[in-house]
Length: 123
Image (cartoon, rainbow, N blue to C red; front, side):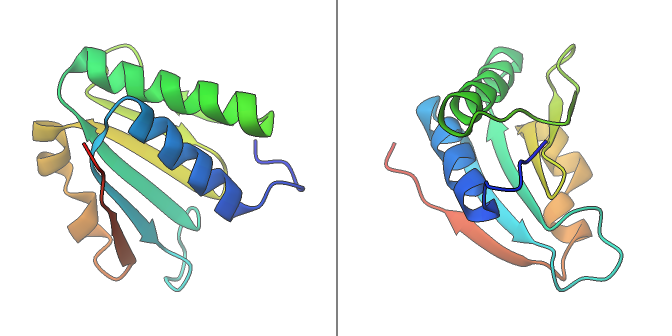
């Protein structure tokens, strides 16, 4: 759960670092703050190329957040099949998808009113 002394911006930066550490693909931040009745303020969405890659992304994020911010997700779902792992940090949710699962659920269009920031990577 996000501690009071950790800013959302800090959490986002560390999560992105965790994703980039294991070369997550197609990283996007959806800012949901201006949309009524949302479950949180931000979604961070990325893709992995396989079950192993999706699991590695989740592990990297959790390790990086734990190490740098001494924090952990409030809840994690989907680790067993690793097609879609949801990491709930209360005011921010991380969605790690395999490509075909991401295309099927299409969260970017489902939350089309969100401000979307695409994160470019150097790999």
